[in-house]
Length: 578
Image (tube, rainbow, N blue to C red; front, side, top):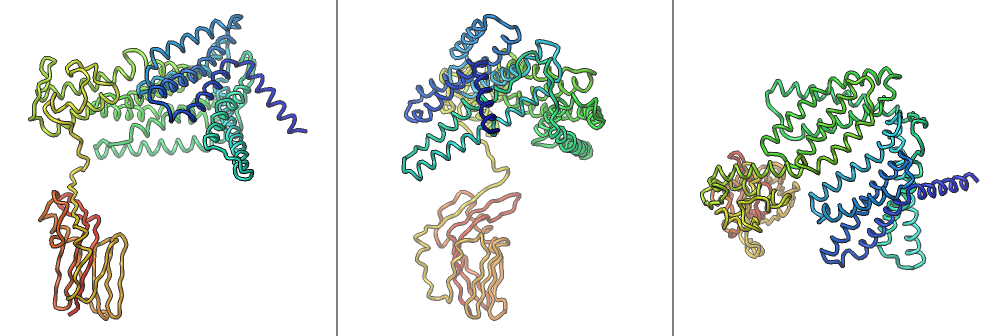
């Protein structure tokens, strides 16, 4: 009986959500149907047709957060003519499709993602601008909890439906195509999940609705996340103290590690804002970390600034800086204002997401200008560009050839080269030889290492005379240490040290390191030879007890810091006991 009531209430709430958000559900359904269509027919479409359907699908998907924002606005204003707002939204979607979604490239995708994020954030914070509402962070937490629950229900629904179809296929012998399972997933995510999630969205003035802080989440924040952040803060301060002592700036992930730490700290500050006045530990954490994090943020910006000074602005670095500015502003706002309105954190993030892809301050424009300036400086430095005219030269240093090639490749891949007036129309990297005087140069990733590889003709080592020898041993896999024993003879090979030894009745007859042969080969042939004869790869070792002939047929190694190192080799050993 309880299950029936539960299902009935669930269906009724989802039906109410469809009635309340009909345009949104329509958008999610149309998007799902198009995705299902692409799953079945996309592989047979040509590129232009496929891109057309992708653009339509993306536009409909963008209509989901846009329709949610419109619904929020009409509810806030108690509008009697909501269709006017939806008509305006439809016109905006049409304009976006025609002018801002002309292709499906990287920059288009970044712009699309930023606009989507801005709209979804708007859906969350818009109701809190309509009245003197409170507990915005608790309301956001409730939405997050519902989103998590929706994910669980959606996965369970999909697995259940997939299990039914799988059983039909296996037990009843009715063939089920593999695409059906993808269809079920799309339908679960695109049709069921939105209706289920929207069914829990509070309706009416939020100032009249009371939200509570979930006890489990409160324990998670206060006694797990916050102590971990405290420990991480101590580690960061110790790390920066190490920098001061060594006077050496670290390379790598400093900015990203600090950024993620700062983002998590901001999220924690956001959620504990409503309980810090009631909890001493939360109040202490809030007070001290909001001050201690400031020097850490300064270090982060210095690290990012060093990278930008060396390599210019890229889209990735732009968004790292932008996120860092938002985090810094949010922490300062929460930490130094007595009664901060947490709604401004999401509102400001939404505004920044929108501004990052439109206008002269957008990531696209600033990254292009920065990288184009770097390229222009390189061209002028090497006298390849004079008065906006390219002058070919074959005397450009190798290092600058690589740097110029990388700059042109980046601009061509991300922004296109049409905006560079000094290059001819439709210029590509394949034309660099004619235009600049040198071909495209790839960077050297060897980092001071010189690699070498020698290989014998396999036919020469398939047939080896053994008339004058007692034993023939095959060391085809040198990755594993090997031991051969026959009667009173024992041969030991250590793959780690490249050490080989031969014993007879416990007496050592021969011992040496095979790495010396790699050094001889490198000294004789360098790194320019690959195919060698059997005689070139044959080494004879002899003493009063034994004669051993080593025949290598595959040798790979490297020279680093004047040291030759064998990385991999295969060999045979012919042994004559005297």
